Image (tube, rainbow, N blue to C red; front, top):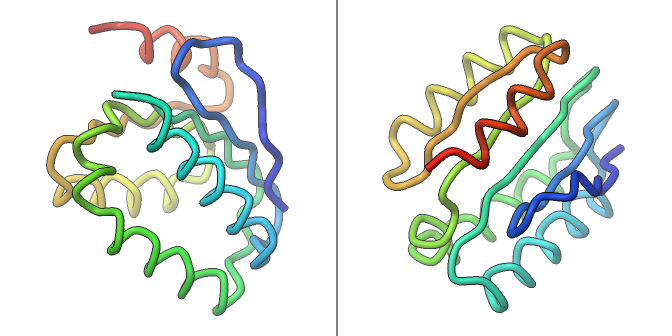
Length: 124
């Protein structure tokens, strides 16, 4: 399940992930990102992950297609992503993926440090 969060930060989209990500969840995230791509010059992401139980294959496929078809715009407009989770494997995998994506800075935080993650998003 994915839930949209309001963290009251300008030009920041935020989500909470808890459980398995279904196609409907992935579509809502992609729709939110697409809106930001159309309406913002630059924006940031904030993601809290509690108990990630995987992603439906169709959702993963659609997410990959979205990322590939919007790659240039995403790398030009997304400045930072704060990943907040206690799942070390998820942090490690995400950090590896974002090291090969130019222009997007990802930093991982524990759930206990969610406040630090939100503050980090405001740093330039």
